[in-house]
Length: 104
Image (cartoon, rainbow, N blue to C red; front, side, top):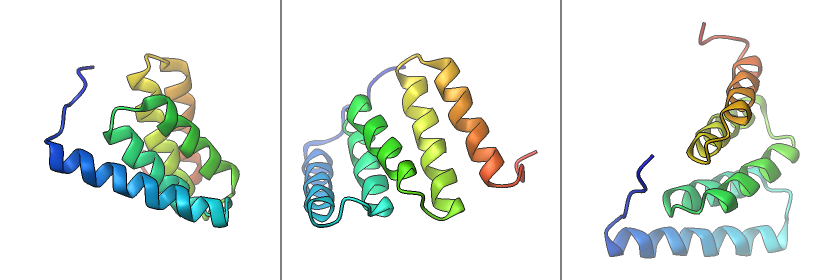
């Protein structure tokens, strides 16, 4: 997969989002939505390792099923970017399970 280089202003905004998420998590590290937002900011900044860690941490904080499913989808995408196809498949399967297999 080819990494996307975003315009400078988008890179600045992604860095600001990541900073705000980290500040929020420093106050309360169990905020699943902050982990999710951080993971997305890192994913779109091409930091796939950081994104995977953020999504995993968010999932570990046991959010509501829909948020957990969304994080599993993003985790699957990041793992696919890292060429971890088995991990990506597992993450996608977890998302389907959380959604009650509505996608089938």
